Length: 401
Image 1 (cartoon, rainbow, N blue to C red):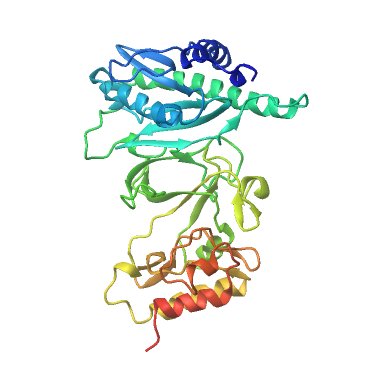
Image 2: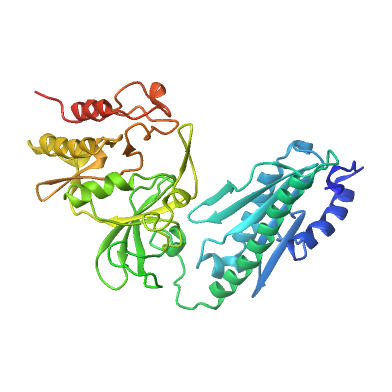
């Protein structure tokens, strides 16, 4: 903390001090290691596999953010990309998404980022920009907070090292060839405890493998999968909020797919069984604050109303039945659009219960799109979802003639 606030005459002098301190904090050497490309990162904790230098933590630093016209987080991203682009890295890149951590700093500020490579380089911030200097004599709480960040990064880098050992030793994973299916293109959770069949505590889990993404959009969070031990197809999605109560109610009445799991990413902590408040999202002024969750449901063979022409004449009546079932239980759906109404063998199924919930509690998310909304999107952001909204969206989806 003291070193980060020092005034250095050059970046090299600052790095001499900081590399030594960060190496101790992160449990491994953090020095400059050339990638043979155009860039040499300011520091890197790495794993050597064959001839490849695998970046676990890549460090870039400036005496102040913007010094020299550069953002150290972007520089760190480019440094990792250069390592991945080397021909000797191909055996590893062909097997996995090559996760790495970035540590970017400017003066007394640091940020931690994560990077993976699917069919493109993806970089996301894992922390905000943290002030790591010391400003007063009463800093114990902030020292603890900063220490937890470095302890977590050190632990994660060590776990990442073990992960790469397994990847290197695994001879069963085929090399990725674009375009095509490969595990590196999909999320890492691949198992769950079925809410309906795993009635006793234990390790029994259903394992699945991903088949495809429902959209080529990089923001897609919904995937088609199948159970490894059978041909049963599943829908897997990742959410920060989910209306499990509404989903279950309609599923029991044959109006939604069976909800097999809704809980933490480890696949074993369905918040319907465990402490629902801690495993779910705390609602703060319309924001949902809590852990990301995995949702697993049956795959419905059929078509969405969006992809049907003409739409069955009784689709409106059957959809209204589902909406009324929710309203009678003081629940709202909130997102009644054509992609979320499925028709299968003449039956209507509602899908996508992300926003559904109790009347007076369920709210629209931020940055709402304007497609088929009951009012102007900007007027609905983070506002309560009303029963009348569901009915207005029903009329827009199935206009009365």
